[in-house]
Picture 1 (cartoon, rainbow, N blue to C red):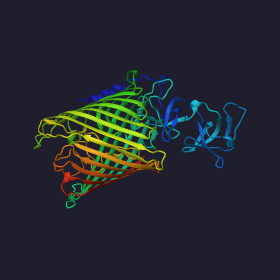
Picture 2: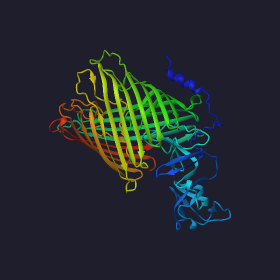
Picture 3: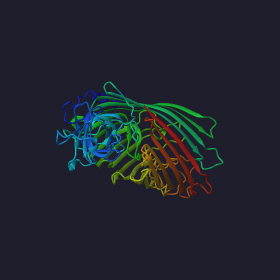
Length: 600
């Protein structure tokens, strides 16, 4: 039988797109020359206006003077160092006959500079037009004219255009003459990671290829909480990922991403070393925007389902996904399943997902999730005990945002889940609330964070209704606060699913350098209802079902990015101190991990 996904893909590929070169709606693909005006916060340019421009010999920077160094013949404008020499031509913006010199330039005068970059953020000026009395509307405004170097989406789905090496955030309030803005639909290498800088393009930019080489060394020590038993484990993983983007036009593309890996496991209580080679297709899908001339897009194939904190999901699913988006509003609807050989707990599952999102401003969004998971396992005569079906239905809410110019962040995730598990009904609730405060004016840009996660438990397992909260099974609980690295924010060692558990989190971190961060995190774990099992953790022992104190964990996470421009490194340590739920004298456990990522 022909796969219906293939038929629909072929049908859409044959459709003639409505947009043409005369379409007033502008697309800003890499290589397009644009002028973008905005306010620079030290990390991003928050765009207020974006206009497509004609090609020109020189690039331009317009902005207020921050400082002048006469000895080095340099001017600072925003993040840029402007080099001036004897060939630089100074003019006055109001009087063509008047010419200025470097020694006359004063702080807060506004300059319009033409020239070329000699290295990142170092700009050699050919011509400088000087405005000694800029209009109020220009105060604090930085204008860049040049070529789009890359397109990305940040962790909240906000489009980012890189121009002059500066990431420029283009939100729903950005003015774009001649058209209504729609998000750039460029896939990211990994949702929580930067796109490789050395991504190669061919065939006039229509074909893009990138890759990542990954290595991880991981040790788990005493996860059975008994020093007298052999239960240590060492894992090593090598993998290489390759991705390819084939652009048919500005509205249509194919994307593919595959991975080959080798993983090796040594366990103290096993006589042999387990080694496994695995090759798989992580993503392969077709995307088309502007369906029927509307702000509607479709994706068909195997694609990445991801959201900011990976609390609801972070997984590759075989799906059809539709997205309607206009201004600050968007709606995603999808039908998904698994084609191939999924993990046993996910077999015979498919799901319907509906997400409505409102983005009132950059980096702030509020979403409502409806996730209907249906599992229909077939009877397996080879199994002595049949695996139960679990078909939960989630009604969830998510609010992530920033305030105080980005120095305050919050995350709120919550869901009520109903449905069935085996022969029991499900009725449960869970939430995860976090807040972080950065002190950007202090050395090292220190930050503090804390929060509480709670998933209901079942006080009567025999009443026919399971009140234990569970997540979707596609979650990773992986994100970051203000640091470089994303990590398991419920504990790098325990890595629990939020089920029958209350988790208090406190921590802090520093950014001594722009490409380095250090986080220290404390977690306190308690069961909501005393039970003799944990739904999913990395521990190799069950609690006693009498005491609710599971223990506490201290984590250290060090991240370092852009080493030699293409290498990211991460170091994690977790130390778990078990509570009374594991007996009278349980022993502590350790976890450590080192990761290297090379992008090419």
